[in-house]
Structures are given as C-alpha cells and as structure tokens.
Image (cartoon, rainbow over all chains, first blue to last red; front, side, top):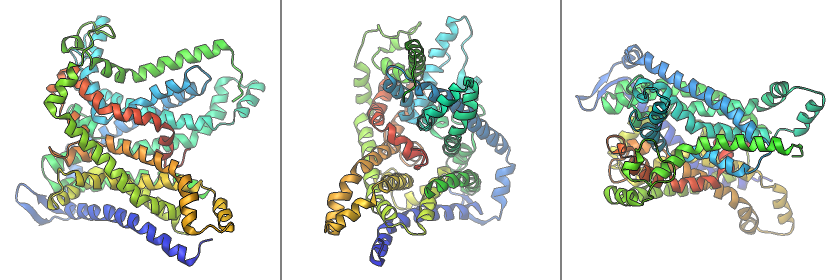
Length: 288
Length: 276
C-alpha cells in the first residue's frame, strides 16, 4: 500500500520529531564531552583550557566517588528487591476475587501520582520527624526511644520513601501481566494436585519473567537518576550522596563544570549499559 | 475468569487486600487529614485520626502567604504546554511509522527511546548554560521546551502502539468504497485514534506535572511550578505540619484525580508497549 509518494510524505511527517530529538541528544552530549576534557570553573577563572583525561581521573579518585557508587547501588538494589518482591505478592493478592477490587487498586496505585518533592517532604516531616513524626509517636507508644530517621538511619529511610513511590508501578505492571495468565493452566495444575507453592514457582513466576525484567530495567533507569527525594530530605548528607547527586553538587554547587561533566559522562555510560538490555526486550516485542 | 471461590476465601482476600491497600494509601490520607487540623492538633500526642476540629484555615494561610495560584498556573502551563506541543510533533511521526512502516522504522523507534535513557544530570550544565545564553532560565517557555523533549519519546511510543492497533483493512474497505484520502483521515482514522491520543495526553500531563529535576534546577521565582513550591517547604516551614499538608494536598490533588483515570494507560505508556 505504501507508494513512493506516501513514503516521502511519511518521511516529512517524521522529520520534526527526529530533528528535535537528535538535537536534544547531540548538542548537550557534545557539550558535556567537551567540558569534561577542560578545566572549567565558571566562578573562578572560567575556561582554562584542555586537561586531557584529568577530570576523569580526578572524579574517580576523589574520596567521594566510591561511597557515592556504593550509595547508588544500595539504593537501586534495595528498592528493586523491595518493589519486585512486594509487587509480585501484591499483584497476586489483587488478582484474587474480592469485593471492591477497583477501589483497592486505586489505593495501591495512588503513591505513584504524588510528586517526588511532596512524598519526600511528607515522609521526612510527618512520619520521620524524631519529635512529632508518626513513627516517633508509635515508638514512644511501645516504650522505645524515637529514632532520628534521616540522620541515624538515612539510607533505610531513603530506600523506604523511594520504594513507597515505586511499589505501585511494579504492582500495576505485574498485575497486568498476571491477568494475562491463562487460568486454565492453573486449574489443570490444581487438578493434578500441584501444591500452591509449586504452582507459583513453575507457572506464575515463569509467566511473570518478562514483566519482572521490564520492571527492573525501567526502574533502574529512573532510580539511577533519583534527585528530588535526596534534595529535600538529606541534601546528600549522612551517606546518601548518590552518583547523580555528587555530579549535581560538582556542577551547580561547587561550579566545577569540567569535573562534573566527566562524572556526567560516567553516568551516561552507566545508564546506557542498562538501556541496551531494555532496548533489546522492547525491540523483540516490536517484531510480533 | 471462572475460578470458583468459597465466600470465606473471598472474605479473607478482601480483608487482606483492603488492609494492604489502606496501608499503602495511608501517607496520602494522613496528609489530607492533617491539612484540615490546627497546627496544635497536627502534632498532638497521641495523634488524632478523625475527631479533630476541622478547619480550612491552613489553605487560606498557604494561599495568602505563598502565592499558590502562580505556582499552580506555572504547573498548568508547563505540563499542558509541553503536552500539546509534544502531541503536535509526535502525532504525525507516530502516524507515519504506524501506517507507512519502512525497514528503518524499528531502529528509529528504538533510537528515540534511547534518548529517554540519557541521565538528566549528565547534561545538566550544557542545558543550564544554553538556557542562560538564550535567556530561558526561569522562564515558562524554556521549561515547556525541555519537558516536551524529555517526554517526546514516550508520547511517540504510546501513540505508535495505539495507532498500530487500528486495522488497516478498514482503510482498504473505505478505499474500495471510493473514499478520498481526506475522507479517510477525517472520518475513519481520526475517530479511531482519538482515544489513544487522549490517554497519551493524560499520562504525559501527569509525568510533566510531577517532573522534579529540571523544574527544580532551571527555575527560581518566575517560572517555578508546584514541585518547587513544595520544595520551598523543606525546613523550617515544613515543621508546620498542617500548612505543609495543605500545600501538599493542593499540589497533588489535581493529579491524583487525573491519575485514577489513566491507570490502564500508565502500564502501556511506561513500558513502551512491552506490557499491555
């Protein structure tokens, strides 16, 4: 059906989107690469010329680098484990017949729609505040000493806040996947006397495999970039400085653009490693 | 689904699911409730769940003190403007890829997706610098453009998956009946495409509304949307729980309501059509 005319029309229709995205990708990317090889301190002398790979070496050898990598990994892996495990359990629960399923679904999904600055502030003040927070009340009720969550247990607190935000996403996608499971398969297994645990392990989990992979990949990309949650809670203090936050501080707070840009290039490479796997799955899906 | 369950089993499911659902929803509920308390009752020990003296005072104070309307307006302009602009660019692109696919369509789609993976912090300074040089820093126009660009891949992908579901046979049948290209587009394709476009619009509006990296870093006063409005409540003002809650409720209420309508599209939009 595609004639030569319609093909060139199609190309024309695509052009604005392609040009815009190409510009959006290439211009900042090239600038970041450029800065990363230069000594560039906007407030202290400006652009002072080439330094080769100096920034790259300095970024990696600075004392803040490895802790930041570690923090990033702990947050990403921690949130992934919590959201995927709870997400699978929740999705299975929500898939069961019950009264008011629609309402429960809405309750579970709601946190996803709360803007990051709000959820971080609400958790920080109204739940984790060591004097007036709800947790403090709860701890005192049980006769325990309230915890200053965001300074004494900063990492678990951040992981908790971020998990609360992302659990709905995981649950929703896994629920959609579970609902596409042929219930006859489960009935057959049931009739053959397969115990529930085996049904879960051999039928449900393999069926969810692809959805879980997608949840992990997409969340990883977003989690590597979390910003507002740290910005308004700890500001990167108490061991919560992630790689992205470190780069942010280098670039905007200490105005060392060269160094920050080198960090940015590392972040881009890291994100692309994850992205390649995601693209492969999505690409396969396009073929059917 | 024809799985038979005993009423007892169903009761247990219902109880468990509601308990978990309410637990997850609780922080939001608590925020909304606290927004109607007086500051004293907001920090009362033990906490009061329902039987406090309901008051609207906090809303009044927050609106008066912080010019809430301006932040709200900025959010609406930025989220709405970027969504509309994005659709104008994306609809033709998704349309042509869905209906006139070529050998390179798949590669183009995947490449577009890959631009979404670029970590924002990696290109923060270049964008910041470009914004300063073009006078776009702290301007709504600048944020509309950035928001449009970061969400463009999602818009195109979502539209593409919707458009692909429109059966081509219908077009062929219409052509047999002598429909012109204009009639085809106007009377057949457009009505079938509108639901997909509407859901794309909705999801994209939500994503742009909640975006909190560029909006925090590229605005100061004039163009600051609700994300920045709330961020300004980090200490010490945040310690006034009732006012913080009122501000938070006002920032999330519109999007919570929209979000509930879009839950089905959310899955498709955020997994790039890989899970439907």
